[in-house]
Image 1 (cartoon, rainbow, N blue to C red):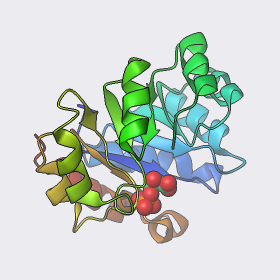
Image 2: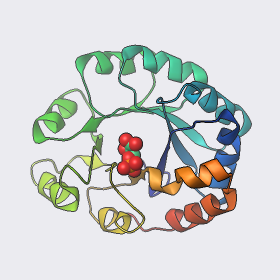
Image 3: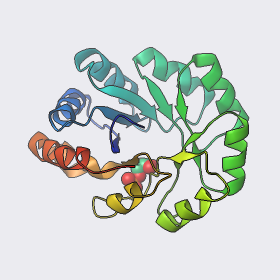
Image 4: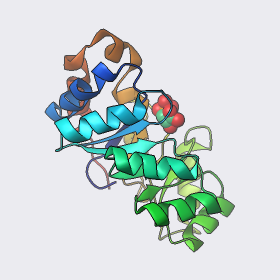
Length: 202
Ligand code: 3PG
């Protein structure tokens, strides 16, 4: 969460996109990347990036089953991201040793995550959960929690999230648009990455 102001969230449809994407992000000074386990080639994409572009910190997203953790770690993922948190996922992150950025959406979920030892949380889906106002409201009762809001954030709205004291970074798919991926427009992704990596965060 402290590597840069933005974590790109990407679903890879074609394995051939993986390494050029990671290289394009690095060229724009984005050094962290989340590949979601939502496509058949996701684990292979993580493996390819971990091997070919080791300067990128590649993580696995959409971890929803305990077995996802071992598979992601074995593919070379350095961290995991989940849309929510359950006792089974807490056990899986401990057993696998794969660090987890867990998703929360309500105060009760923040309380449960803190009791399990997490202080860095993903607010998901951030915009739909109340966006900037929700994060400002959560700062009062949870002053020791830092968020990576993700979901429904855009290039236009990212700066307002990053200006909040309890936000370290934001996540989102807007940094690697599907159309640019499909067209192999790596220059466009590098340009977006360069802009995003220069955003101020607290
Ligand atoms: C997702 O669930 O795909 C991520 O949270 C990214 O959401 P976004 O596409 O709204 O940025």
